[in-house]
Length: 320
Image (cartoon, rainbow, N blue to C red):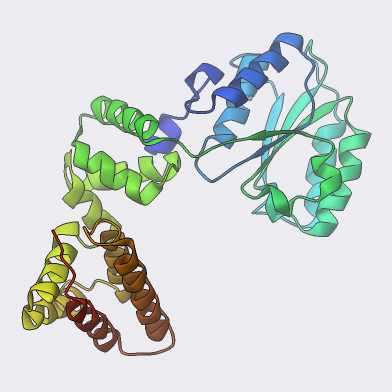
C-alpha cells in the first residue's frame, strides 16, 4: 500500500492548494506552449515536486511518464558533476516524439549540487534548450548560483496555511476512515508549520496508534510532551509547589524518557501563551536559552531545568 503522501499527491494543477500565483503562471505557460526553464523555490513540503508533476500531466497528458516525456532526478542522491555530465546530458540531448517538441527534466533539491556541478549545468541548459526544458526545485534559492537563476523563471512557493492543511488532513482522514479532532489538526500544524508532506506523514503515524486522532495522539507519536503536563509543571513552580514540579520533571525525564531538548521546546511554546507582560516573557526566554546552552555544553539536564523552574518561581509571574 502506498504511503499517504504518495497516495494523495495532487495529479493536476487544479489540485494544488495555497499556491494561487504559481498555478496561475503555470496555466498561462501551458496555454501558450511557450515553456521556459523554471526554478521552483520555497520551504519543504509546499508542493514543488508535486507541482512539477502536475504541470507535466497538464502539458503532455496522463501518460507523461510512460511516454518518456518527463524524468525526475534527485540531486541530493547524486550531487557531483558526473550526474550532470552523464544522466542529465543523456536525457536532455534525446529528441522526443511528441508534438510539443521537448521533454521536461525535474532536478529536485538542486540546491544540494556542488558549485562545479552547477557551473556545468549552466552550460547544459544552453546547449539542449531546444530538446529539453528544465524545472529546478530548491528549498534555498540563495544556494543556486546567479547564472542559473538568471536563466530561469523563478516561482516562489509559500508555506501552507492552517486552513489549507486542515482541509487536506480532514479529507484524507475521511477517506482512510480515521477521525481527527480540531485539537489534532492544531497539534499537527504546530509541528509541521505549513509542510504538507510532514503533516500527512504525522497523520498516518498517529493513525497507526489510534483511529481517533487528537492532540494527545499527535504528541505521543512525535515523542513530545502533552501541553497539559508542561503547563502543570509551570503552574506548580509559580504556585510554590517546587517539590511537585521537581517530581513531575523527574517523571518526564526518567520514566517517560522525554529528552531535555523536547522539554525545553515545550516550555518555550508555553511561555508565549502565558498571561504575563512582554518584558517577563523576554526574561523567561532569555533564561530558557541559557538553560539550553548549559545543557548543550554538558551540564546535567535535571539540574539545569530545575534551575530554570526555580528562576520561574522566583519571578512570581501570574500564570492564568
